[in-house]
Length: 491
Image 1 (cartoon, rainbow, N blue to C red):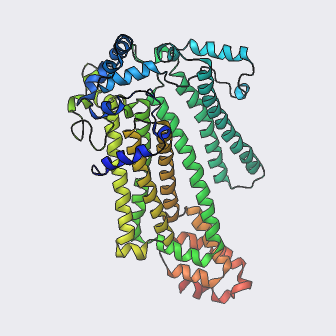
Image 2: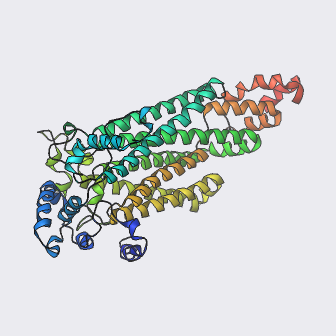
Image 3: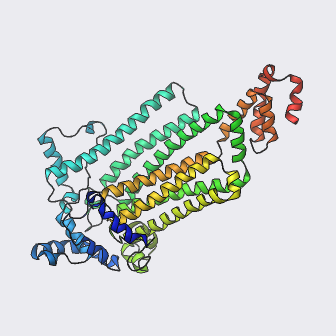
């Protein structure tokens, strides 16, 4: 991997420069590459003096010539660029779910919204030189995000109410739909709660620059992932059940293969992989919330070694207990260096797990005859998205988190999780409720299918077959005489 990086750096600048331009840095900062290559070995030592370097660098930029102002110090040059160019965040205090659907319509309304933003610590400490045009840009970004969230909620709730009221769905599915609707509403509340953390001085440590809480950011992100996963999984389940009910003989063959005890390890591994992908994505949320992607912009190295020094990863600076009881978890969730290392480790573990699972499904002689063809095809998609996600993650890190690459990396994590769930829907066993329903359909279809089910103990539990007996007796005039029942169930 390390040998590929020099070639990647030579090829990447040939692409669109604006795409790889980092929004956190000034456009004319010619010392960016020199800064990147001459990073201090201990980034935490520089990070602890980061707030002091910001104020000092602003004086240095105004009192020195251009060559002197471009000293190769990563954190100091980063602070210069932050001073030279406002950081365009979007934290607005008002949350009006209904009346806030329209943006300001007059200059007076725009000025009123701008005055409210000026009173926030974000404007005072980060964006004191922001103009009205720049404010309108970040305002429309935040407004579009909130409006899209409302559209998602309405487009889900209205059809859900119709289908439930008209009894178009089962009771269990109605409960799931209601749960997803509750998650959508809870997601909106979490979004407002997250934004609120970046607007008040008492919600972040004194002296630190204002940002939304990384804990609330991950809660907002995690709820969005869970809500999306619930929608996707229930949709895949409905499509799968409809397909199996449409071809009972093919359903017998598929379910007999899925109930094979030798496939249970593969099925459990897919569940573990889905959990690992989700946890890795949440660790990326902590990296984003702590701006941890702006340090150690190399891979696989972090400074001079594969990982920073221990005193940097487990620093007493973040502990708030005298006995150090919170040393481990506070560093893991609040220390940018350890947060980035955790994300690297989890991402590497996820990619390794995907490659191992693909190799087993592709090259194992037992797996070829055991795993369904649809599952093997889905495994190719999982591997492809995993490789794409690795490339996006490394590129985002090397180029100091440009917005297009960072957005693509976040979307890639959701795409990878989606394909793991698709793989699971093709490999995991259906619910007991559906197994009972399918057994009844087989009984109605006729004795040959029912006899085939009983002879194969891996197809259905016996309880489901016996539940199908009354349905078979109701249809005895269509398929078999009453005298043949004993031979049917003892065959």
